[in-house]
Each structure stands twice: as C-alpha cells, then as structure tokens.
Image (tube, rainbow, N blue to C red; front, side, top):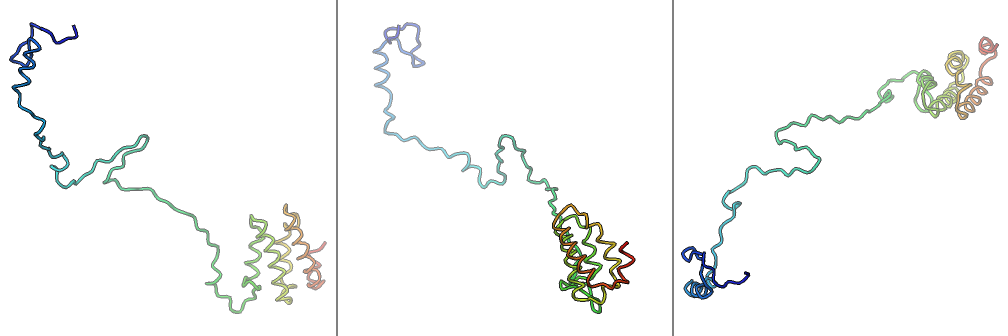
Length: 182
C-alpha cells in the first residue's frame, strides 16, 4: 500500500501501468510539453462585441429598479405667502411707517405667534403717531379687536398692550373714549 510497486489490475492501454518500470518507459516516450506555450483563448466578453444591456447588481435589502419604469414620486413643499403688499394700491389711504393700513395691522391681533401679536400692538401705536386725527374715529374698532390681548398668555404682549392703551388714553378725546370705558 502507498507505493507504486506492481499493481496487476491496471490497463496499460489507458495509461495505467503494471510496474514502476512501465511508468518510466511511458514518460520517456511522451513528448516534452514544457517548451510549448499554451494558446490563449479569447474570453467571452471579447466575443460578444458591444454590450447593449448590462445586468444590474442587486444589493441585499433593495428593490431592483426597472429601466423602463416611470418614477411617480412627487416632492412638494409648502410656500405660505400672505398678502403681497407691494401689489396693493394704497394711494389716498393712511398707512403706518411699514406701509400697512389699520385693517391689515388689526388682522395680526389674532395671530398664533406672540411676536406677531406684539407687532400688531406696536403697529397700532405707530399708525396713530403718524395719523393722530384718526384716533378718535377708530378707537372703538381698535379696542374691540385688541381687547383680548389684555389677558394674553405672553407677558411681552401684555406689556405692549399697556403701552398702546396709554397712548390711546392720552391721544383720544374723552367723548370718543367714554362709550368704551364703563
């Protein structure tokens, strides 16, 4: 076992030898192939020519996207434009230093943001500093609209309301203020 000595059941026609001497004889009669280079065969890619379709590699956990599939996803963002005050014609109307009418200023009194409510009260003060003759005419509408801000949850808004109320008390005629103060 384990040696190449005398095996009797092998067929010499198939290249199986009976003895070690037969193996040596066979090796001597075979041509020497070490000097001959093996001809290189061309690979499959060279035979194909230009490739029209490439197979897409699929990664684990991802879907294979088809080439002819149309993307139907829509991305959108919300753009909130309040009134564009540039386009509004205000000739002949009284406006504040920021270019807002009294109606536009009062519209901010119910805004969800505390800073906007504070700006509303500051805008009313600014409006009546520029147009003090209108204070007696509009004091009822202003007090009705902004009276809820007296008990606002934000302290900055309440402080601005006190400053605006002082200005209204000083500037308005007592006859115009009397129906609103009980």
